[in-house]
Image (cartoon, rainbow, N blue to C red):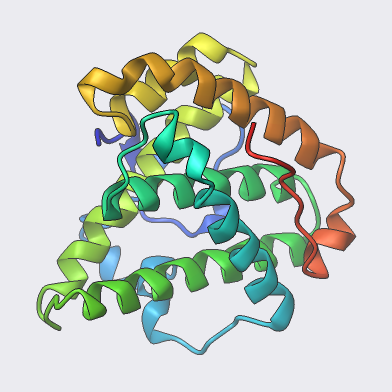
Amino acid sequence: MAAGMCSCQPADLASWQWPGSLICPCLTHKGAERNPMIWSLFRKNSATEPVYAVYNSIVAQSRQPLFYAEWGVPDTVTGRFDMISLHLALLFRRLRKESEESKAFSQAVFDLFFKDMDRSLREMGVTDLGIPKKIQKMGNIFFGMLAAMSEAMDRNDRDALAGVLARNVFDADQQVHAQELAAYLLARDADLAAQNPAGILAGHLNFGIAA
């Protein structure tokens, strides 16, 4: 996985610069310990039933066998993290221009994602001392990829998006499938644009079939 090309600045998800900005929150920045995104692991749980429902839909969609068995996404912890990240990015793109309530909802889903990653790392045996560094790395990867893929998607540039995916998601011998995944993401982005944001905030998120 390669990090996207962006300039690191401390910020929270709600203040993400959409569209076209290549400024991304950097968890190794000197202000990272005050960054409310990743370090929300230590704040009050903001997840409601609709937040859990939407996050579960994202996880379920990211586990579609097609991605791994046919398109060559590595069936590893890293590959599954990447697929969840891509589907989270689709949600954030859909809600980015909506109400303050929508922004808060996106933040709550984001918080739940990294709490889930924290839990998974602990189940894998990562120590308390190792968790912060792992979470920092995962966060930097997530925001780097989010910046690069969204810039390409705002231009509806399938080739540029495929390039982002080839660099970040696929092993060298599987990059031929980057175009297929790029087409899938653009199609799902269009599908989500037609979904009522009120329904999403109520916990109803439909990605449709994988391909």
